[in-house]
Image (cartoon, rainbow, N blue to C red; front, side, top):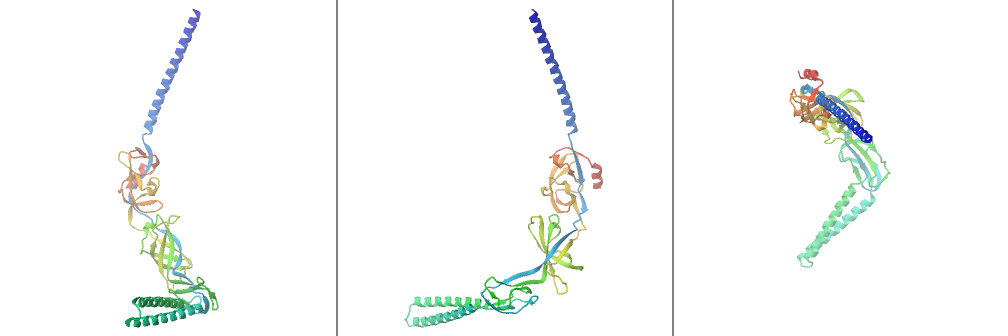
Length: 364
């Protein structure tokens, strides 16, 4: 009997303990649900900063350094073997197309030319003889055709020998100035031996690079002022002649400006200079560069709606600077775009604007 009473007491105590545990768990669950509801209510929006789409002057003025290069530059090499007999020019001389620069003695070429002349005369004589014999039936038509072919081949060989013989006189292929002379009378040359360096600086190419956010501000045909480090008291006019269609590894676009050169301008290839690209005075529809989702290349921004939700919007951009970007299509004046907090947003997300006063001021 005592044992039964003891077991009953243990059962009652166990049940009471379980009841207490269940009560505590339910109480904690209710408390957690209340806290979760409060947090959910507090986090039903995302804090963001915004800016207003507006018309403004985008400052695109910038400076770019570069170097002058010759309009044409040519390294001349020997095409035939031989000994240089005469050199007709010196470094600094101006030369024109076809002007003799040097004479190379090419004995073997002369011998080949004489052989070609003799072979041509022999083939011509044979052809004439066969043609006359054919009239009287002394030879066949096939013999005449072969003699004609031999004459044609001999004539081609003679012309080639004349060309080779002519190459013994080195002539200027372009107009320019002898910048370097590497041969003297008596020099023995072979095909590929360096002879002269000719540069044409009647016009110069000013080579520079423009960053991707500035490249849209210039176009071919633009006239731009160039300042030269070695001639600080003068300004030169350059016309944009080339804009690379592809950026280099530094994400800059090679650009060339053509500058007319005269004896009085004193410009030389290799000089350093700089160009100043002026800003436009016209206002353009623009937004803060920070508005783009991820980066400007995404071409997407979040637009704030009157109900404090945001919509991901595709835009088309124009010129850009470090802070501002022109909007060509996709937005209108007065639209509000998110500039901070985009990482937490999706289409339809409810937001709370933290700089509402500033954005309202900007839109006025």
